[in-house]
Length: 498
Image (tube, rainbow, N blue to C red; front, side):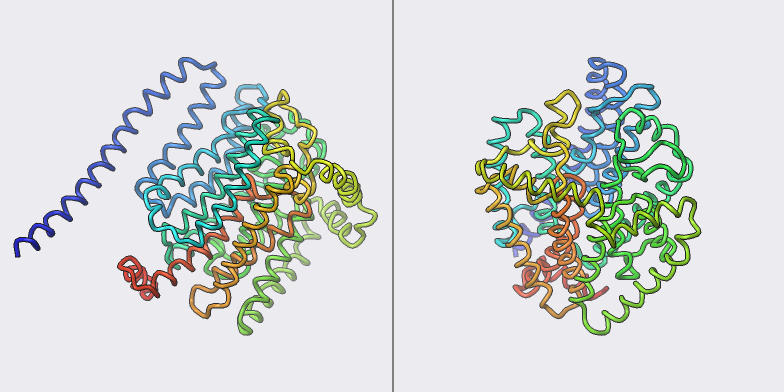
């Protein structure tokens, strides 16, 4: 009896200690952060001080969510990925100064990095399947980072962060244990954020707000049109049409497939997202959208296939009627018509020429150029201008150029390990299968999109690993439940109740 009393007293005491430690940490952050911000602001210029203050304001809620409500952290980080570029443009416009490199560019990465807090707290729960995937990716990234630091300097650090932060979602979902209701809430929030991005994108297409026009004139991106109504390729709150289209596509797939994932506005929201996607004029996004939808439908039960096909017919019919009535519809229709004659398309021919030119270069350099040699990170060591491989419209070439033959072998090996885990999950007949099918669709879309770019670092990588992680996390629930662990019993009760 004495032993039971002692154990009964010790458990609450331990919980109280943990709760007290968490509250002490929160209080320390709340008290210390303003002092740190104030001290840092005194050392910075007025411009850097403004950017730093906005950055701190965006980062603080992420810390609180990571400590107190880790399941809500993903929705917040998605919002920051979506709006941070727009906040940067507004800040530049308010100062009247364009900054090719801004502190606000770090906002999505830093907020995403707070995923490490719940991961480190529950790392003992991670399973061998997730550990194997992370180990393969780690070898590839370590190899690329070593080469990159030697060849590319500080740019490799930024690029490495763009790979690592999205990959944190794999251990995050492995240890956080989302229930089906939690997953549905996350996808619902994702849809609402996408609708906001789409609504602003349509406004941008019709009016071009002054801060967006200011950025277009100074960024010297001639491929996105001119800063006048109906003459701009929409980038919405993102930093260019490509990321905007990516964000909308990865939100649109769940919205079309399942009613519970559509968001507050339901089918009106779906149509807004589709219309905004059209105004980005990113045709590769439509290919990824089609592939993801077909993969999900093909892996669905027979009854589910017909339901989803009917929904697609409804959306297509609505677009067929709406698009010709939109302002500037002639340009949209003309852009889409080029899909039927790709041999005559300028972008297609440029990509073909890139492939022909880069294959011999990759073959002659099997070691690779290292992380930081491709993409936006080349600006950091090149005075704010894109480097030699800043624009790389082929993801396979980009990965081989970055990691070399050895690093790419581990990277693609990790992708193979991921699809193996997803396939095991898809073949299971249970209520969690839709999330596995969504993971399968995301993995396939990611691989297919390598024909146009390397989407694994940055925003696109974050969206890819989020959708994949949801399916792998659902698998963790089933595996734990079969083993009858105490944690699994609690999860099972939640699953059954929903």
